Length: 73
Image 1 (tube, helix red, strand yellow):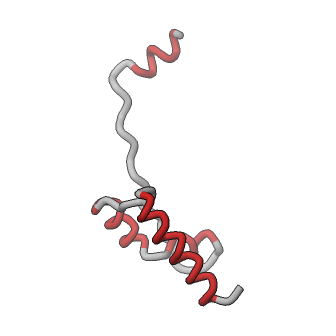
Image 2 (image 1 turned 180 degrees about the vertical axis):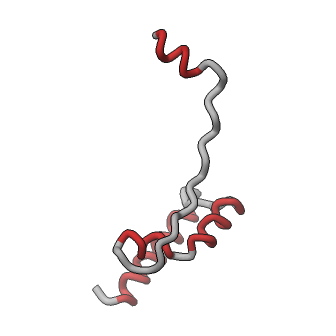
Image 3 (image 1 turned 60 degrees about the vertical axis):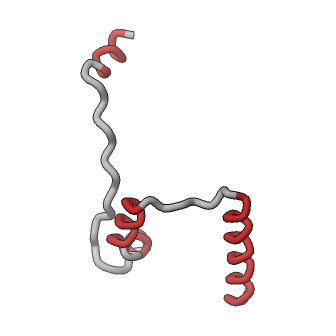
């Protein structure tokens, strides 16, 4: 399929998702993280581009005693 046909199909899908209210809306934090990656992450997986680690959101720490409760169960 040529690029213009792919673009046309993708455009229709995006418009339909927005019309249905199911399209993903980036938060400013998500957009900032994506901008910092700058497309480097996919190229690193393929063995191209500079070796940079992608930023991964940190998990919220578990409440105190959560591990102890899991062990005793």
